[in-house]
Image (tube, rainbow, N blue to C red; front, top):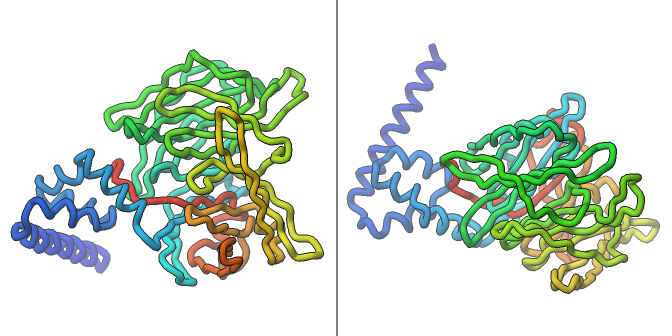
Length: 389
């Protein structure tokens, strides 16, 4: 009885809020309404869809959605992180987000969803505010801002063995595309490549006929300025010999592949990230007796010429393997280190500013051992997006 009464009171409050807001908007010039709405969080805009047909038409307008994302991505002193935690015993993965504002030392994580573990998709980077996740036969794209997702059609093929899938975004045509690649488990050879353009009125897979050079795709990926980069092994023979780690690029708009050679000194890189707006690959050497951790960063300067620039960071802190397994580099140039194993609270991450050579701890409530055993990935750059609102 109390529960029902509480729900009724909540509905009454929402209804009263909407009536109050509707009355206020009637006295605001129409030209100012879009600018006012852009300053609201996505969850508030979801409620404003019910306010009036006028508000709904503004919020669902393609130009408004684009300008809202631009404003969200350039909002000062705001940087969200996406965490992926794994419960190996239940074969589940859990997703959290944390909005970091200013220099505060404590935040609360927002839990989003869970999905089945997929051994060939271990990371979930945010691409233009969206996340691609799920097992091979139930791939989804999820919007953390609206907490809604879309499930793709199942791939119809008898030759499938291992899936690798990546999410990309074309800023020119404003299209999201999912690249799905399958390879033979026994020979580690690429078999089929499909692409799906994400539409709100329906989605279907297309085969890519212009296949790239023979390579074996791997888990690491990132999309930067309309180009999807993913880790791959080149020159693979049927007996799994002569494997050379490299990078493949996929132009999301033209759907063309290119192979980018990686310097020999960058062999066996373990992370793929963005540095000053460019692709970068990383490797690290844990702290030894000197308590200094070395991180090597190779930044792609010219993809056509395969030119990379090497940057070395020496951290004057004993960062162990426990932290180096889960870390990222933010758009502001800060390193974020997180533990690869969930322990008893408090859970925290370490921010390192290489310009100031300074560390700070950020405590995060809500991420505990109840969600599993390991922290698989940390990714920065999650911004609010109105898709699927």
